[in-house]
Length: 142
Image (tube, rainbow, N blue to C red; front, side, top):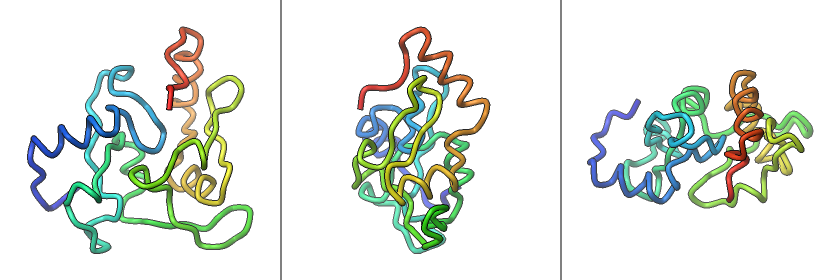
């Protein structure tokens, strides 16, 4: 949770920029019926600011798993890699959907570490995605 006040106007601006969905798992506010959190890409605890350039939307679970971290160990290379930055990087360059739309698959080391560290394939979320895909709500258009 941020220690710095973020104005309602800035929150709304960031939400619109993020298309009202989590920058990591791409879950949409309109599907889950709950507002996303404004998160610090570089956490305040790591020196990140509360300026627009460091803020994005995140669902509460992705934000909780991310916590104050910015990197993790790539399961394939065993190297430390920085998490995906939804403000500066393109999601589809680092991730793709499984054929049934349930799983997020990593295409790069950045994608892989982000999937593991933020637990982007949480069982309940995977089951939800598969249900959303069956009715045509998922995967989102990027």
